[in-house]
Image (tube, rainbow, N blue to C red; front, side, top):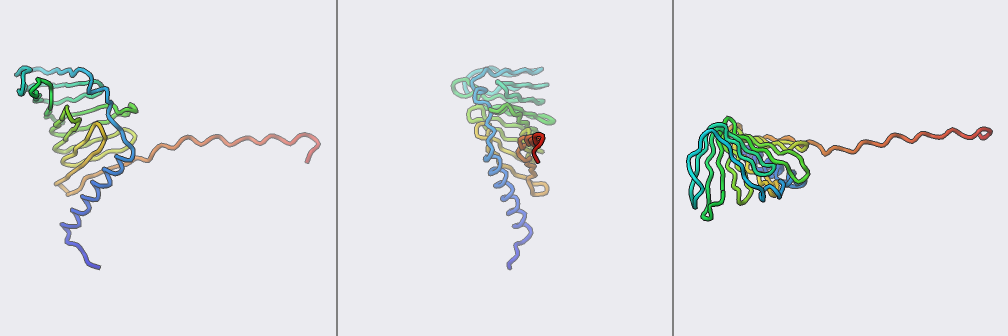
Length: 192
């Protein structure tokens, strides 16, 4: 049996871990609320520099909170990018940590934390960089240096430099409660 060098084994384990993560999360989709993308986006911050014009960037600082339907993101600073039609195309939030949460179609909460959250509003893709974590309530979590989460399909990919591993926990699907055993009825009098 031929053995692989340690660096190739670590790369193979990382690739396998990512493949397992994507496969298992895709097996039980937790799609983000589709109605969220049709809602108004609300932004609050202590300071604001910019305006809504084609192909521009606005900067928000101090307790930034951005919400759109059940999607909520917060951090210390945010850069809001507008496309050629003056629509919000992307939001990059930094914080200690930056935080993202959203309900899926089954009203299960999905939470994300990282040093930087880069959310593509047009594609529904959140890229979490720097000590990143994503938790899907009741389903499990993933941690790594970089996690990419598709809020529309719930597909996730992960990378890690530190120990070279992406760490994941998968919770078993809750089993329905077992029915109570049926009570046997007593035999009628006079019968054996």
